Length: 476
Image 1 (cartoon, rainbow, N blue to C red):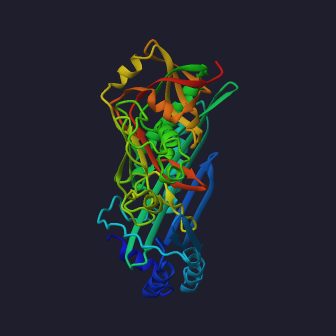
Image 2 (cartoon, rainbow, N blue to C red):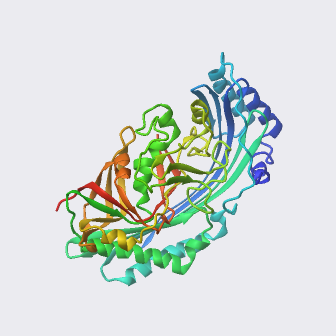
Image 3 (spheres, rainbow, N blue to C red):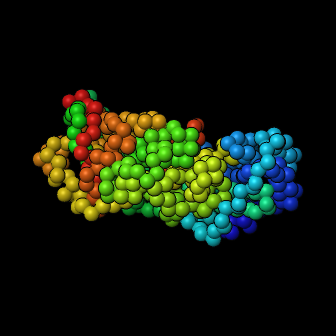
């Protein structure tokens, strides 16, 4: 198993923890439980923000701690601490063992091991000097301001983290992972007269900073943020009403993630609070719609070699040709539903209990040329990028704001529009997909998903696709 040696050095070689004693404490705490684990974590994080022509914020943080969980049926006992000591783990063991008292369980089988390694174990924070990172942000600011005299404000941020985890189980098995993560975020504000608009672009993944420091890469990111801002500077009021909508490839997959993906997570379906509960084998989308959650894509922001329970991630088929075929599962919900874990047990940190979460959620490509999809719409909306959104998991109702959108007039892309909102039901929207492009794209690597107060990095993707009818909220 990769990374055991690295994590052993972090957690045990310092002398604060004795591996055999820690293993014994975990085994005794989990004896008689259905499942559970001791999760050890070490993380370094760095963030720099350049705004208003100067370095406005710089931070560096190191955190470490553990989380101990025992599962008995539907109940789970969880305790965590930032103190990595045998005494602290023993105190946590006393707490979590209460959940399995009086419970006669059969320990679940350990996760299957893997020798896969989906990303480098290099720490991106230490790979480049602090001064070099500041210099890059200064270059981004200067480049953006020189691109167009209408540029009034530039904001750029660099974020990096390096997380090392080791998972110990009652049977003595151990799994480990070392996870780099970087992100570059750029915002450009332009103004003309009294009107101001902002464009955004971000990029990242489980990479080193080298990719983001490539001149062609960061200049392209600035150019795209500036382009979006200038497009919105000339935008007219968005139309309102029910109409055909074409979604662009890549980042618009965030609508799929929110409006459909969350409803396919195992906990919501076990509790029967999802609109997709008890619908395996039923048609939930138009023919041709195939959706997967794939945590195995190399270097992607949402990918994991193993999830936070030690299960290798997988390419999980959720919807095939419009038919619901599966759910995303952690270990507890999979066992209670009589299914197999899919490697989707995730947590924000050692201080959070794992739950079923998405990794990289994608709609697969179809066979239509994107130009043909656009040409099929006489009067409608072309949504290229989204901002914020809200979703109700119980019924799939969503509201999403468009960051960049255009009218479609007689099959051609018309003027940019401002203030467009897409309103509808995820399940209903999937049944109104009538054309799917052959241009599947993944997002640039900036997504963070929130659920029950926890945020984790995720990815999305989709091809160009047509929705025959969806409600658009606007002011036009």
